[in-house]
Image (cartoon, rainbow, N blue to C red; front, side):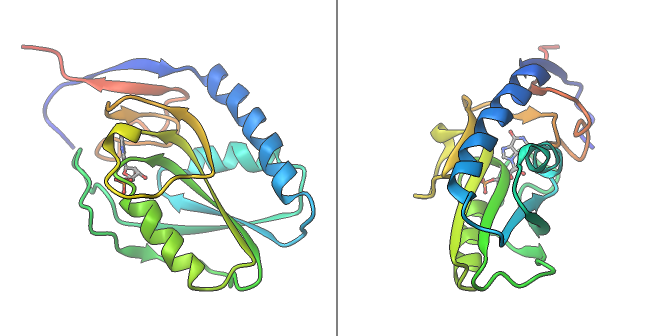
Length: 180
Ligand code: IMP
């Protein structure tokens, strides 16, 4: 945990997130309405709140699985080297897969995960991210659906942490270090 004091300024309200998830779920339902073999894959740990709200808006037969990839550790910088810390429990060959990410930042995590899952021959693979920071992109990856495009700010809340804290905030907030 950082010793440096910081404050959190609200950026996206809980209400705005809920409204956007309703819109996104309609688009996802449209895409997957012909299937009964959808697996929704949450990338731990940051997507756990988003995936919980998203799947409850989906009126489709879905299974849920999780995958954990290493990213920031406790720092504010991406490690760029992606490692799989926890793999899926189920098989995805021939299945329809929706990967749920909290934030696409440099894009290394999503690119790596998509490459890995594509190698397992799913019937169809789509991706959704709650937040997108296009200014930070270092790869050519893009999610199929994005909740909100945000500036290059470090954010927390709604499942997203800074040094493992603040995941329980109901809104997305920007971390700010006041001048001392
Ligand atoms: P990427 O590989 O650089 O795209 O990083 C993706 C992961 O980094 C996300 O899934 C988050 O876990 C983490 N991350 C990126 N930006 C932030 C942020 O602003 N706050 C907290 N975690 C972040």
